[in-house]
Length: 277
Image 1 (cartoon, rainbow, N blue to C red):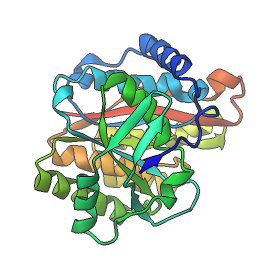
Image 2 (cartoon, rainbow, N blue to C red; image 1 turned 90 degrees about the vertical axis):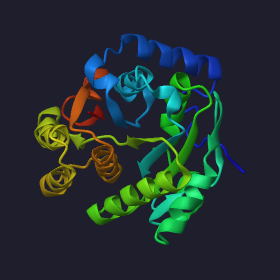
Image 3 (spheres, rainbow, N blue to C red; image 1 turned 30 degrees about the vertical axis):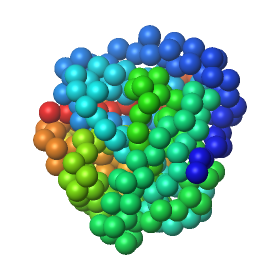
């Protein structure tokens, strides 16, 4: 089974050569903190159209490419929010995923191990079919990692309890299969308010991530009305990193769509974050 792209030609180019060139340009301009990149365990990247957020996502993926043990990572667990409302609440894909840069293999054994550990996690393609949050990450990952193997998780339930459930299931599956994994959380930050308001909501929550306090992050997002769409996946990434020895988070880049559109009165905000030792 293979999932075909849903947003190629819209969120990013559908021509492989053009897409590769665009990503390479973003990567050349990104300069992530070297110390944080060297010790990073899990990651956060935005998922908007590349013209708006690609330069921010490049900080995340360039940091990933700088990781000394990159070749030892056997499975990338990519978690995105469910924008469509389709499918089950915590849905794992059982398909390989196609992009203009080729096919990304599915670690189906890992997916099945997760569902076997908790029945609230299901293999369900409906949640993934039209969802962009995971798909947009894949060409960036393919640019950095040759033939990556992934577990794709769509998170409709973004409660703190659901994040704990997923974090435990990822750890359990990794231990059961003796897999070395790394989590990539897909999320944009505050939507459709001014840049000043967005910064006022986003930066305190990101501060909680830099202190590696996922509970405080989750509370601040919900309490401030911040419309970060993938705060559940980010919470999982922070929890997972902490369980693997991370001590802090590091904001590599923060920007808004205003830098591209010139409209700072209504923006979407983006952040590149790593969780590191």
